[in-house]
Figure 1 (cartoon, rainbow, N blue to C red):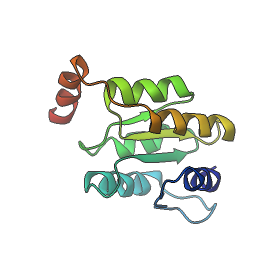
Figure 2: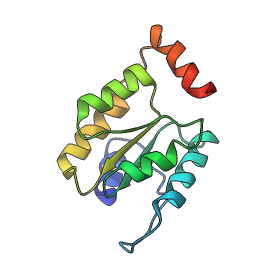
Figure 3: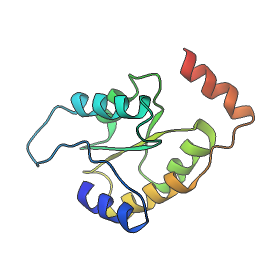
Length: 130
């Protein structure tokens, strides 16, 4: 799924940064969640895509960094709402639970939806400062 999403993003004009892993071998998702979270927190990329088997563990790992608002989603509406209402800067998916076409739709919704601000800003500020 990662390789397909990277190619899809490139064809859409994005310049994705692949933070690994580089093989199908079992890895510890907290290591990669931290790597992505540090990358986002440093301002190296405005958005991130996190993938693990279920999307749950990687989202928990990313959200340990207060600069990250990672939403684990399984369909495009949740991805759009995560951006629109929560200013999510990372989207997480489970490769075992989400098919490739659905993943493409999720990423598209996530990257094309703007944060609405307004009443939602106050809540996002509370997430950042809690």
